[in-house]
Image (cartoon, one colour):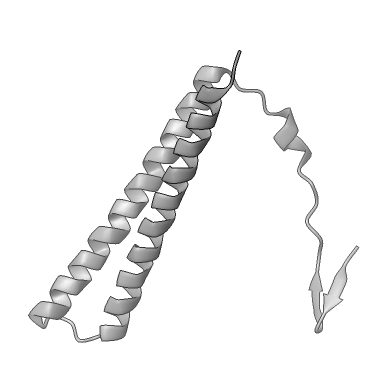
Length: 102
C-alpha cells in the first residue's frame, strides 16, 4: 500500500520479522551493549573535540566562519545533553531492576 502526501508517495514501514528471530547468548548481548555504548561515547568525544578545535581556530583567527563554529558548538551541546539524559535513564532502569524482588 502506498500513501500519497502532497504528491510524494510514502510506503508504510513494514515490521521486520528477523528482529524477533535473533537469539543471542547473555555474553553476546553484553558484548554488543558494551560496544554500542563505547561507540556512542567515542562519537560524543569526537564531536566535542571537533567543536573545541573550531572554537580555538576561530579565536586565533585561523577561520572566520562564525556560523560553522556556532553550529558545531550547538551540536556538541545537544549531543552531550542527550548523552546525560540517556545516562540518567540507564541508571534509573538499573535502580528499578535492583529493587525487584526475586
